Image (cartoon, rainbow, N blue to C red; front, top):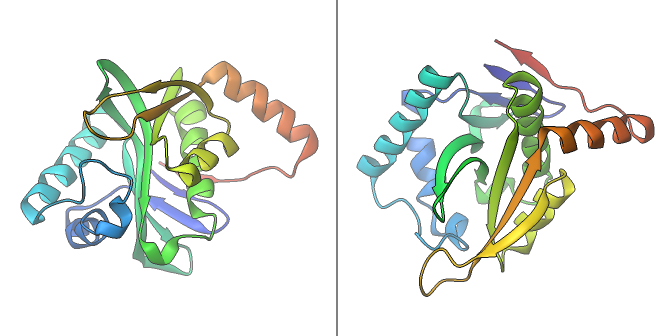
Amino acid sequence: MDINTQRLVLRQPRIDDLADLFRIYGDPATNVYNPLGPFADLAYTQTTLETWLTQWQRESFGMWAISHQHQPNHILGFGGLSHRLFAGQHIINLGYRFAVEAWGNGFATEAARTMLIAGFEHFELNIISATARIHHKASQHVLQKVGFHYCQTIYDLPDTPPACLYQLTSLDWQYQTNQKRTRLEPFAIMIES
């Protein structure tokens, strides 16, 4: 399932995305707020990519490779919906990571909003969660901007800043969407199955 927004293309990842995945997830700059740090090597990156591909085959949703419509072969980041065990809870997690070159353009907000539309309106999920470290204010801002509600602060890893858990239910999403349609221009995406 590929998605086109005003500026972005979100497509299912492919095995040949390995180098781009390592370029972005292996970069220390993109992992400043990640207590686990950057991906260590290509072997770990390949295992992650294979997990993403398996999830798409099994469940028809997952992580996307994200590029700009004007440069569809240059990956700016990755993001999507994945299963995650967080602080003992199983969640459907919305996550994203962009190359440094893509920061400051509103791509995270545009992509996150698109992922929510797909998650609630196409995949019919009931609840979507997201986490951000307590000192990662930019990520928290994106989550709040697209409609997530703060739930709790969780000390999930020792000797690291705690994580803030955000959630959004399909009912809250529908309410917010109906409210926005009366005030704002519609946010259109094109989903290709």
